Length: 172
Image (cartoon, rainbow, N blue to C red; front, side, top):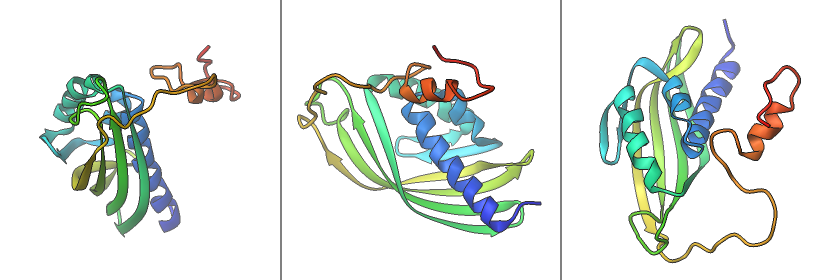
């Protein structure tokens, strides 16, 4: 049996892993964080976790990138179930840079009903509550200078660094 502190840390890691999986377009990683009977309620979407992942697969390619940033995080534990509320902001950018539907930042709260399934915390039901939205159309500046750049599907600096850990498969 895990401690309350361990459960809270695992739940926060789950929320962070979700954000990373969306930002890196790791759809299998997104699905793995939901319970078998998981449900998601997002702006523009309402349905099962499998349907949500299919929706993301159609929606995310329209964007050049996303970046989710997390803030306040509160967890109420009740045995093998919990409710978590996590505040955040998500930046979205796409081409053309002056298109408001592709270039915006939103403030949100994830309200998650979680369940311990097969020994790990999973999202049984998520409400992605949009608190506000701001257009960033025409404000994105191109990257300048040399240096590391974000990548997806195994070519991000994270993948390279993790691949160098002992007993891990290499990305290079």
